[in-house]
Length: 260
Ligand code: PGA
Image 1 (cartoon, rainbow, N blue to C red):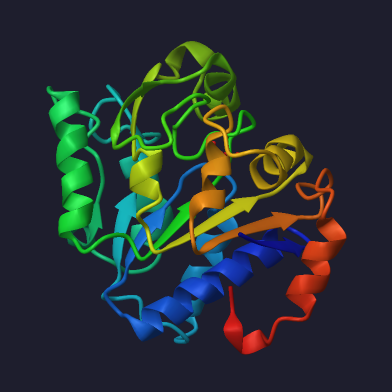
Image 2 (image 1 turned 90 degrees about the horizontal axis):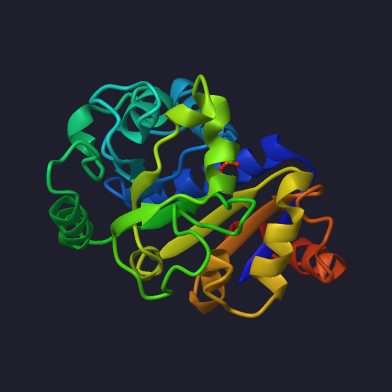
């Protein structure tokens, strides 16, 4: 995988937004897999700025969700459907019809997970999937010891993840215990995986994912199995990488036109 160390979150957002814009210029109806949480917000802000500046026509892009809480009422502001509509779909000037996600309100959660997995393939597969990383090494909501071959399914959140996400709710008790998430096998089918991690709190998870063994205990380590995976980290999140100097030198030597 390619590791790119950037000075800060804003630079990471700009770099990834440019890669997404380049993809949309090549393939206007690209299927873009988006992630939620705080980390990807600079990417969405940079993309929206390009649209506003007239540098990017995103009007034919298609957006798909990585994961969703189970059981939040429809329209709940912290459901990932609401978050993606608010942070990505609306700022890019897209309609709801350009967007797909797992139905967290479905009475049959298992069937809804399977339907979503099938719908992603039927849509031609994800062209670029954005990922964050949990402090416990999760991608999507594939918590430690998720099968590396898993498909979209229901998962139970670890206490750590519920505590990490409690900031979006009034209290820890309100954070759902269950989620639907693209499986690791599903995620690995995207043509390009781009993981962004910022801040010192992610340094251990990044080091384990990038330089540790491929292991279900660290779901993000599955990116090592993908032929086109890019890990973009700021200096703080890169602080525990043994090969940081090598990553810096490799990226500095890369021709600019090649992108990530
Ligand atoms: P965060 O979440 O960006 O809010 O840290 C990342 C994740 O849990 O994947």
